[in-house]
Length: 156
Image (tube, rainbow, N blue to C red; front, side, top):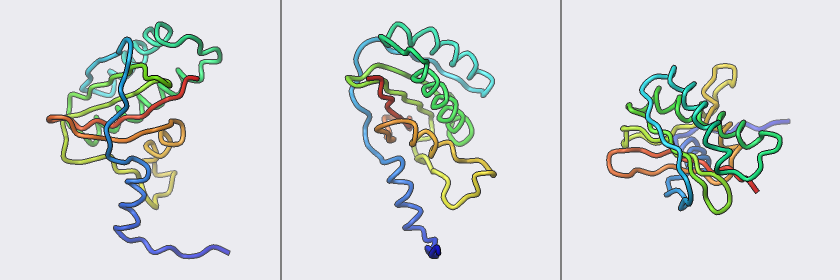
């Protein structure tokens, strides 16, 4: 038998900070992919650019799992930036000591990511939760006039 959990701003706030804590991203090394977009239709070009960039950075992605996860995370985070942030949205990817860093930033530094809480998944809005499950370390930060939402993908 289940139990009732009270919905309160504190509980929702806790779930948000657990999923996407405010903290700086890890340091990166090596070549970087970067582009800016202002419309969702431009995501196709971003995916194509990442497909070209990744083989030069990653020694082996035999089954394509890293690329698939990267592309899904880009779609979700960039779509959120376009929908809820302010354009242009900047997509950056770079190697870290343990994998890849995906950093998606927009020009709305006043509002952090807000994962859906107590929403029927059929209504959508579960992208941040999905990215959190598929990636390792993640978070968000503000630098200058840009909000950065980032996630790390393990490649080893």
